[in-house]
Length: 338
Image (cartoon, rainbow, N blue to C red; front, side, top):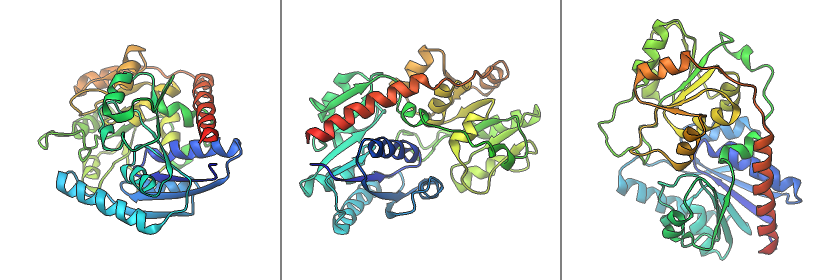
């Protein structure tokens, strides 16, 4: 019987999602949870913002070099094993360390994902079950070791936590303006950025928006991309991490170099523009483009023209609620079968 559930969080976008999964399970009668996190980007600060005060930080990001990443994975897995985390089941967004640790300790593991380009094969043969959006071809996942272990659900991963999202009525008071665009630069350090010579278009995008007098809430990732906003008078850059969902909800449009913000905006009905720098778009993003909810371009002028012609709609969370209930029902059924 599953009693104690361990959530392992390795990146910032996973915080909202895995807390939403925890809340679903809490409402379904599960109540014993433990959290661990990896020190990377804003993961720890966002966890604190979300009220998760009891968690252990184990391991850090080791950069993009393959040997460094392999060393980091091994080091973190050994640290998690040594930590002797008491659990019956681990839930993660494809954390190899959590899956390996659970397997070595004879415990169950469940992974969530939405990236058909990711290396699911690194954990696919060892995980017990996996959840993915139905935008992804089942065969791609089966070929990576997940055969007979997959549940494909309708909608998007972001729907699961947006279904219960309640905007902060005081959020705008923390900004120097009420009407604005969100700009989030590309994640140049991500695994999917294969070419070290790829340059960010965020500096040119910010400069042109500033010249047009457009207010921008700029959410930098690292210290080096904070420099992109230097001396731009219409660009506001928070000194510390802010709640990204509220930033998206109140924005007139979102322009981002990575997927999560783009999909959050699209699911909320906010005009969404992606300048993702990977070699190929994810299946979930292709589906949003086909649905007319997302525009992709790495041409600055095209992005700005699209933004200026766009108009946000009133969020309707009924569809997200259906997705959340579907996933929760399957997850609870699965846990009760273990």
